[in-house]
Image 1 (cartoon, rainbow, N blue to C red):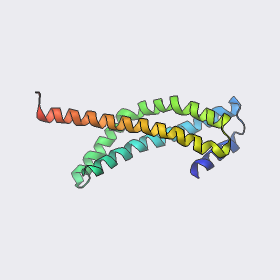
Image 2: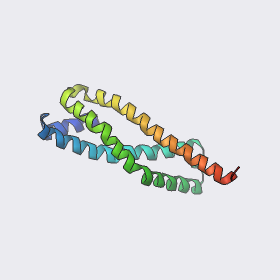
Image 3: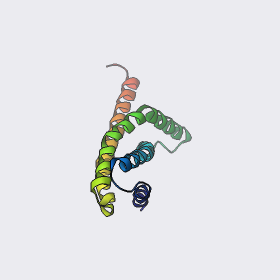
Image 4: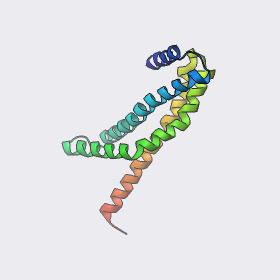
Length: 142
């Protein structure tokens, strides 16, 4: 319901699909969604992984997870947000120009599944690299 209302608001403020109406819709939608959704996913992924691994039971574990999550965000958010522009700007352009309003959420949900897979890959790939770095540092050179 929230996305449906969001898209409705964008259509009321900038009705139509000509470039003059489309550009502000795309830019505002991208600015709001990219700055919120991708970083939130990375935070959520780090916290869930830590919880499943039992690293959130002690205060020191929670502090380490918070610190690691913050470092990951600093390292990855710019790259992920820039990458999101390559996917979401064209997807939203297609959505606003060609997809009827009642099907927009369904179309964007399909695109979001692919994006979620990409974010998950990035989050887990980097976690594996961190674990390999930590284990080689702890065990020393072979």
